[in-house]
Image 1 (cartoon, rainbow, N blue to C red):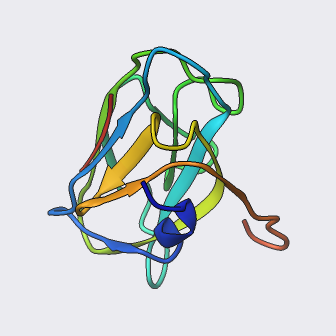
Image 2: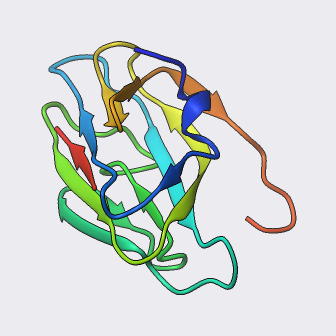
Length: 126
């Protein structure tokens, strides 16, 4: 597993494969990640199946199940980006390191990171 800091600023597109995995123990708050357009916002870029949630107030953002409350054991979902390439923006990431992970493009992310935001504010979950 690697530190989630690598997610922030990652460029994703429709061929980017991402998935999330939680084990049977020690749930955390989960994660909140947005896929921002490089220029003018175009609306929500996500195709989501399973238990992840698209933020109705900001459809460019997707969260782990139950965020900001703890996600469930053995939960899963799949997310994919459609349309143009996007830049990931991670606001919160809190998972059980090494066991509950979000993976994308061959990288595995788990652990804890938050960032305060002022002014403006093809994945799978298993």
